Image (spheres, one colour):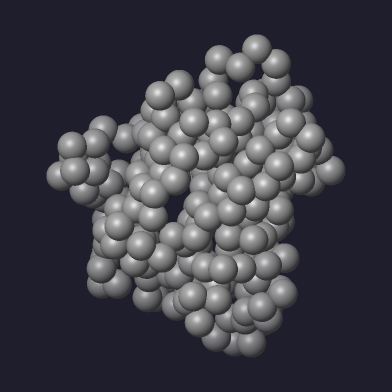
Length: 217
């Protein structure tokens, strides 16, 4: 997979690594195991690990896997999914364009609110959304919630359940990344589903995740 997003961001993937690189500085909000929280950067990666992966030091492992390709990412994710199966979708609303790059591993689904339990086999839904417009930090965090809502709706559409038969809300290790131009002169204050960035991000997530689930099945 190789593509240029509307915001000038280059997206490439093969079986073992998804790379998102930007010539312009990005503001990034994420729940990523490496570089999570709010940060700035030019490079986001998702690296493939085996299903037997123990996850004792994911930040170090991401850095090492990226370094083997000559990359120094600011934010990184992990998955056991073949990253050549990344699915993307681009959606626009008014002057806002969002591109979502998604992988879906559903070997171990989860229902939020279920009793704590050991996490078994590897299973992760990774959602990365890049926008072409500026956001306030609070709007970026709001978008993480909006994209998560879109994920849950998509799982419901496909009737994905847990091993116990409950409607699944995801897996126990899902991650979301939202990125936008850091130096944009104007910024959206909100990222809920009724806003242009929220609508575009949710629609792109719904489309890309639907394709990713179809491939996984």
